[in-house]
Structure formats: structure tokens, C-alpha cells
Amino acid sequence: MLSPKLLAALREYWKAFRPQTWLFYSGRDRSRPLTRAAILKSCHNIARRAGLAKVDFFQLDDLETLAEWSFACHNVYFQWRSANRDASILTVE
Image 1 (cartoon, rainbow, N blue to C red):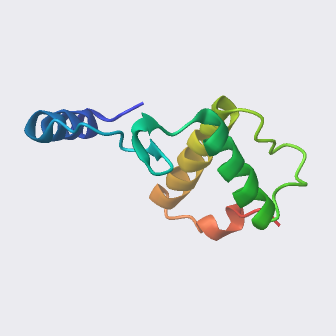
Image 2: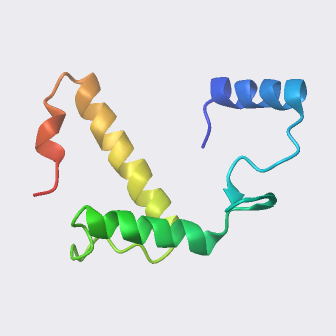
């Protein structure tokens, strides 16, 4: 879900530069896109290092789950901030 401003900016960028490589490429090979498996592996590693691996409700089984959680957290955080509420209480203990 992109805002109209962001979509317009991305289209303008593409028209101006016509990039020939992937923005998120696979390792050193810019001709191949970053794979789903590589993204999931990175997410699992980050979650483990952050201590989130044992939280039952936060399982990174697929990218759709990650996208849903990210979107939900983003919305809650910015709704609290826009209401001038202290968003620091939204952290996971």
C-alpha cells in the first residue's frame, strides 16, 4: 500500500533513471532479485538477536505474516504519536 505521493515519486525516479538492476539484489549478483528465503532467514536472525524468537504470537513463518505485523505495529505507533500519547509503553517486555 503506497501513498499517492510515494507512488508518484517512484514513477518519476523510474522514468528519469530507468534502473537496470534490482533495488534489492541477491548477494553480489545484481541481475537476480533478493529471494524470499534470504529475507526470511534475515528476519529470523534479527528476531532471535532481539529476543523475539520465543514470543509465541510472533512467528515469522512467511512474509505475509511479517507484512501484517509490520503494518499493524506501524499504524498503532503512529496513531498513538498523533494523539500525543507516550508510544514508549507499546514496547514488548
